[in-house]
Length: 241
Image (cartoon, rainbow, N blue to C red; front, top):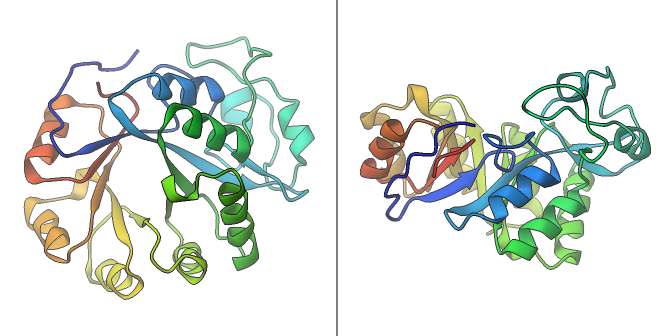
């Protein structure tokens, strides 16, 4: 079930990783709703892929095998093919017919209904026009102002900046170094960084750059408390209540 020890988050905002992955199969409507029902979480994170027929779905990996037992490549499959798959709950087999891969629209509508920010990871390098499609979908649902875009891919961050020059965006990274620092400052994006390699010196340097810092993925309350004390703007967690 994960660690549910409470912490005083102060000004640090809590992000539910893949929905509330500590309770439900990640990146499913069930996980999104679980996070939506908990006041502690400021936002709900998900991963977005483009299907072969130009739709957008929420799934972490580029293949469905780890969540369903069925070997299907996400980006070379159609939306209907992917939606036909039943997913396995976090507590094991068998796959359940009520757990399916959500669409981008499913995710955004749940975030909007529960008043949560959408922390949207562009999971693969996307053509500019596909990033624009995603932006337009979210805008059409009336939730763009409540969405933060994140990605490991510099071209996705640059595309977000092309269409949304001042919109919240965070560059995902495993380390803080001069190349990363240069990129975030030149493109006016914030940082979303794996916590294990973050020293106090590196953290202070990030904050000195005037950027917001999101640390992932923290499920240990003691580690979370440390980053709260340091002044992290966000903590992304599978479950940390």
